[in-house]
Length: 134
Picture 1 (cartoon, rainbow, N blue to C red):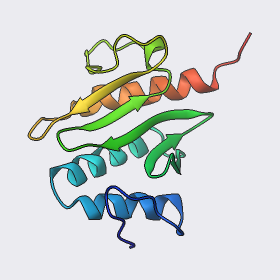
Picture 2 (picture 1 turned 135 degrees about the vertical axis):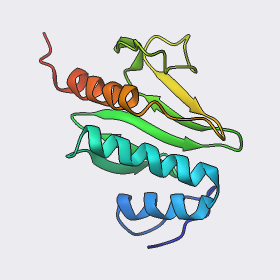
Picture 3 (picture 1 turned 90 degrees about the vertical axis):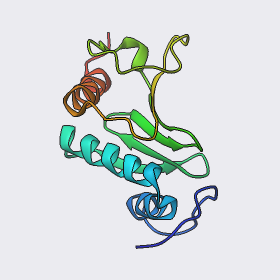
């Protein structure tokens, strides 16, 4: 496993290895949270593709971008690319609520993730990405 400083872009390695490195480099609640989010995404969409974009942002894709996993000092932000078009009956979206396209969930230290509701959002994002256009 490679280690990547939290604020730097990685050079080399697969996107999955770079995400492993980001999680390890954080070594606090943010790394644990990002790792948990990643696991839930993979459970919801086993054939998800992990990518690394914008100089150091973990991105999960299936038929297009599903969501990102950004880490900040006070939050781990999961931004759903087409979140505004997804049903969110559990009210997980708590950030970027004014935009026409994206929606995000800010996870803070000590918060519990509603795992089933989160996986339902991921599955809805997959369905949105693969539905026929027209």
